[in-house]
Length: 542
Ligand code: VG1
Ligand code: CO
Image 1 (cartoon, rainbow, N blue to C red):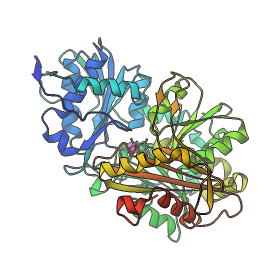
Image 2: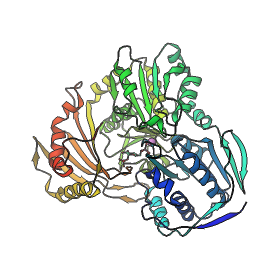
Image 3: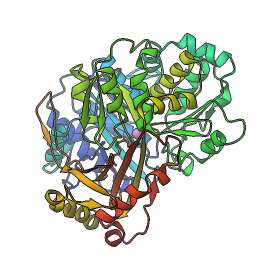
């Protein structure tokens, strides 16, 4: 088998966003060497991998199968010693993160566009993770981007496709290829963190559970862990077969996209716990009978009740949340004497803090929760944590959440997204706010006064790196907060996200949109959203 050096032209747009390089599938499929250029840029930045191990897998979306074969041939040609690849090219994002750590790999590639729809008209993406198992930090993605702008050639082995359908060892040129059961190592890790016996007792007692895998990668994980290992009834897992087009839906675990699950959780005879995960298995949604648990509240609750899980008992010293995530976590941290960190959006900012042992739990408002067991957010892990809490307390989701609000107050929280905006309009909204920041404190808007206003910047306490322009943040004297930022994962135009919240200690059981109506109105007025976007309402409300 010969190594071919293929000439290529650089693309100007291969800068990874919040989580990897995400584009329309047709960009990867039809632009010559679009995938190859990015992968070679990673190896050019890395230097000679000198026989190191890499992890490879994806969420099974359309083009995953072809991309995996391209990556294998390029890894072999670039001097990788061994690749651990999931059977059929499947690995959830958290499972890939764990494999990198467990087998001391130099890094890994995860082929996914997460919760974005798949298929020829959908999205595709690739994430590069470093040796701690986490997403490449901003400094690394910038260096890879810089290489991609100067690339002139890539290396690839001339070889036929490998059969990845059965676990076992094979070779590709000088490289060892190990096809792994995608679930086994990951399931073993989780079994060490939670009391599986207690959860088994819960299921044996008739506890009713529904998990919607949304035809993403988590189906096989959910079946093995919830059904085979923990004894949940087989029909607990919905849409458990991974499909290249996710059944034509967005594999996005939220109230709008999981209609069937939500309907069953709100209907008569609702199960005790409902949950869902996204395409690549790092996001989660938690539902009780007739109750949606916001990801912000879920994070705060896990932090408060961490002692109920053996893997966390007595070992929490610090927690972190992304800046736009509600401050519910801060109240738990203050009450429990935990250090609290506020980072920019994106899991890559938690990596350092987790590595340094400064935090053990962290999360984002965007349905992401995780811990130091690996270096990505982890959907199945979050669901297990909830099962563990319910098993240990012997109460329901509603009781746990209501008890939490009674003790800490409730952080009413919503996010409004304006999608597919003209990028100039999106940028314009933020630039205008940025310009007006110095004048905002002290001004009264819609019945409240601005107490602080800034353009969020984060100095990483471990490596000292500075990340600026991470969102406009406005605090008000009625305890509310509004945050504006542009999404870094979209593939069409710009998406403006407006995050709004207010802490409330008296009225704990009201409707979120009603409770936040004055804050929402204020958020629209300050940034003149109707005027600038030409839209009377956001496209998505979560
Ligand atoms: C979004 C979320 C962010 C999350 C990121 C990747 O980014 O807001 O919290 O880390 O997606 O998650 P953005 O830049 O569009 O707001 V995933 O599950 O899509 O890898
Ligand atoms: Co995801």
